[in-house]
Length: 123
Image (cartoon, rainbow, N blue to C red):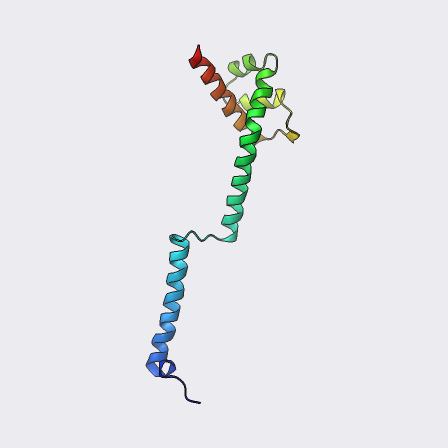
């Protein structure tokens, strides 16, 4: 059986080089401009989206629970910005059966600060 001309001699070398170059170019274009991601990046993106979605639901509930607690806002206003998450955790232990953790407390602090700033501008 005779091999095709494209797979003989110098033509075969150029053919294989073209395949290799095309594969590298396709991967480069795919990852840089095409939006391809590795499994690790996809997992990180999923985790971020899940956390963001969870926080968007839990933070308003946390803010409502915190502002409804007696003396919480006075203690919050008197505290330094570094200890406010501890005050949130002191008054709100769980939000919708989710245990208060550091990231939720930080998001709740931001929510309470926004609520206080909105209340301050209305007066």
